[in-house]
Length: 188
Image (cartoon, rainbow, N blue to C red):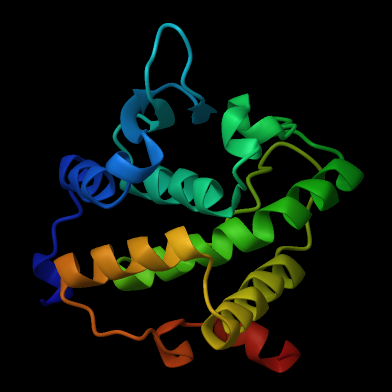
């Protein structure tokens, strides 16, 4: 597929997710949230929900990545039991945020490669303390390297395969498919 003809449709992404995971994990991908959130099944909803912002394809991939990292016990907790401080974090809060974002963003990057979609590392703190985005991007890249050599988590691997099949991307993924910003090469 040529990149200029690729359509990243969230409704098709939802179908891919359901086809891959609903029967085994009773989990659905839901578009239209004002803010992303994971909601475990309860008396009102018989299935778990990964809610992503509006109809943003990238938001969906990011939230799926968090789900792929969360273990069975965490998938029974709202937002996987993690704290989340919105944009405007202090330097220490930002450091903690980035620490828990390395693995999900590495998985999200792999999803983007499998979907033939550009990826941007996100420090998600435009109104807070200035973050060292170079160091954070490098850590995400290094986590991608580890996943490529040691293997992705099972659900992440399954979804990479589903995306790659749909977007006609060859597997296995290779490090050469993950473009590192030229400014980061001096740090590798």
